[in-house]
Each structure stands twice: as structure tokens, then as C-alpha cells.
Image 1: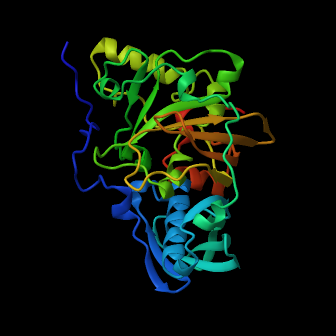
Image 2: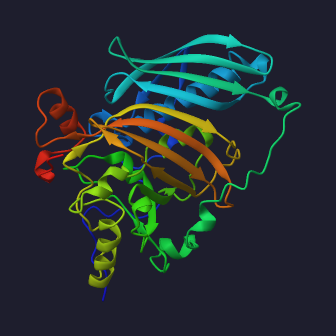
Length: 360
């Protein structure tokens, strides 16, 4: 049966006015030695609201630029620890990033970055960098921590892109103007066809992710994007959720049987709104200069209390090496009963209460 083509279908690598690489939009321009300007691009945002992962990646790229220009004499180009607090919502448009050198050392150095928009601080970040000198008299130790990719079914990436992998399926987010979560359109998600249904798995989400443009690869500053590119595990506890670890595989199987495409699914939305409060990232391995084509992201949550829940993140490469760990704190807000500014924030992200009748 020939496949029907969704009206929001976009071919892999088909470049148009709406599809850009991260490097094309994440342009950092120095104003002086400690001040930089950038732009929150609408194609890496949720409607008019900035994507937290893009904010983090912009900050990360600015930090890298600062250490390779103003602080180049330190020879400490690599960020290995980063903590960010999301103070206020940020919109698309120009932003200013101001750097303060907190502690400059011979082996490691720490700086503070403030992202400002419309004269208000929107996000603040601490980052610690190191270089070759920090590696002297240290060691690496195999702790026998299990490799996440090795515990999952094998993934044949060319086959999964063509829809022929028996363990994994691709999931594409079409660029639907009615639900403008455009940042999710820039990647291809790959999820398990038959995820385990035990209690521990219910608290997790797992997917391989690759940039939609075939020539683009993940770089170290883009780990900020990766860390914020998943369905919150909390969604697994709502059986009627259109996007979770169980409804998405079921719909994919139904679509394949009906001859539909990987784009034919409900808009990426939820009656629940998930603002990020803070995020900490521990970088175990710098990605190679040429980047990585595929990375595996797993999110795991332990508890949700009074609207706050935790997310632990692991990022792995194709060789089964742990790339980075993340710890973040989130709110979950029921849009169907929310009022005032929270409703307006959700609407700016393309999230509407009409998408469901959640009563958390």
C-alpha cells in the first residue's frame, strides 16, 4: 500500500527557509572582552518562547568562545561542569550574555554567565573549564557501570531511517504552525517498538536522536539541546497522553499498518506544561571535533511532589561510552486549571488546555 504524505512532511535534509543547522542560527558576536550578543531563533523555539535546551546551548557556545578568545592564554577550552538556573521565561529575539571571571586557575577556571533580554536577567550559569594541565597526575577507572546501549536492542541506523528496523522506529515532528514546537522539528527521534512495561521503565524515557540535516552532527555545546530533548517521564503515568513511551510506539505500529508516514500523529502537545527550573551537566567525554551523528538520551525520574519532579539524564555515544550526566529540576503544571501568566506561557509554547482534560 503506498504511503500517504502528511501535509507537514519534510524530507530529510531538504533545506528550506525553515530548516537550519545549530551553527547557522547560534551566532555569537562579541561586544567587548566579556560581553556577547546572540539571537533566540524561532526555529529553535516553542512558538515565541525560547527552548531551554537552546538557551543552554547558546550559553555553552558563548562560554567556549570566551575561553578560546579572552581566556585563550589559560589553554582551558573544555567545559566539564555546567550549572544553569532558568530565572524567567525568555522569548525569541536578541539576547545579551555577560561573563564574569570568578576564579582563574592554572588547571581549572570557573566563570559566571548571565543571559539578559529586555533589561531582565533570564538565565544564569556557572561553568568550569579545564585543559591538558588538569589531566596531570589523574586517573581513569573502569567502575563496571553498565553501558546503556548494550542493555538495549541493537539499532541499525540506516534501517531505522527507512522504517525497516525490527526493534526501533523513527518519530518525526512535522512543522505544524498550529502547534509551533519548532525546535523538535530539527531532529529525528528513534524509540523502541516494544519498551518494557515494568515500574522502573515507566519512570524513564529512552531514545536515539540525530539532527535532521544529514550533514549535521552533535557537538559538545549542543549537549545543552540534547539534555532537553525528550518527553518528560511523568507523561508515562497518563495512559491517554498522546506522547509517551507507550502511546508513541503503539501509534507508530498502527501508522505502518495503515501505510501512513512517521509524521502522521497528533500534534506535539500536552495538557501539562513542563517549565525547567535548573539543570546541572557533568561532561565525561568531550565530543570529537567533527561531532557525533547519533547520541542516546535516557531520562529517569524518581519522585514528583507538589508539582516538582527530578530528571536524571544520561547521554551515550554509539560505541557505548558515557558522554554526559545531567540533573535537572522541573515543574509540572496542569494547563486545564492553570490561570494567569502560566496559561499565557503555555500558549506561547503552543500548549493548549484543549489538548486534554488533565486533573493532576
